[in-house]
Image (cartoon, rainbow over all chains, first blue to last red; front, side, top):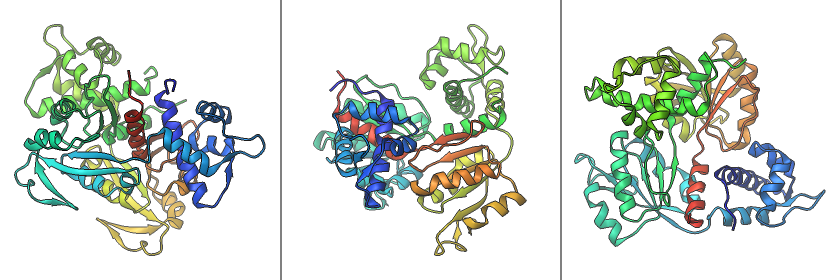
Length: 208
Length: 208
């Protein structure tokens, strides 16, 4: 497959959301216009994105909802299980352990770690919080696909280095810091502080 | 002030995080190299970003931590109060109402709304959940700066239209859909589903 830009992957996620909604509503087909509206793209962009992965749509009829959803899921790598460790048993950890979209995508938390002796051994939902000192030996015994970093900012890079050395190739980072990782490691960031500051900036620098 | 690109605003947020950490650790100055490492930029980029807002750094000494933090806060519009309504009293609402970074940035939730009769009138932390039908009359009486949309995807655009008509000029959107808003309205998105799918895609399309 040719290289797919991150912006295309994001639009595919958006299309999938719309298709899943359409499926729940019993629609058999959707138009490129409907997908475009949902994904913040033009209908031409939608057709271009989807033609890239094979021919789906029929002029005047639209895209078959189920078939297209299945195809996008396959492209996005959904439909298999991903094993996940969570480092940092704070508020973010608790929210994630509860997030239904996590399970729905086949993401299974295998263990939760913290450095705080007051937390180690206690439970967070179904998980017993483990000492982060055990991270390397645990991952050697039971490798995982994804590490979620929910530590304070100052600890995040050190944790990233450790999981990368253990062979982890995907990181979901909630710490407000840019992680330096090798090229072959994918990092997604969720940075609430940054989103809030983008808004306060915008409110103070009104666009003409 | 000249136009500031969103990517610059994001780097300023990163620099601020690092400066606040340095301040807590009692450092008086930081180097452009330290700021660069934190913000995922080059030292030259840091110097360019900061020179844009006036001259701070001294060659061989670095940037004064407190002064630079104060200046960036001012640029980002922090240090004043922002009034916020939250629409959707679900999991996201609960997590946000608990997020310490929200208060720390002067973001004050004035009301939480839902459409579900089973939730209306009940409490979410310090807030009584109000009927979303009251949104327009509440905002007419007590305008707000920011609306946080934590509704299901299908409801998000309708809520965005309503708050924009009420004069809201900044939206924090947690619904997995691209909102269509007028140019003068700023939207920040936090889309967990999309971040997870970017990772599963990356794990299935290894970079060379």
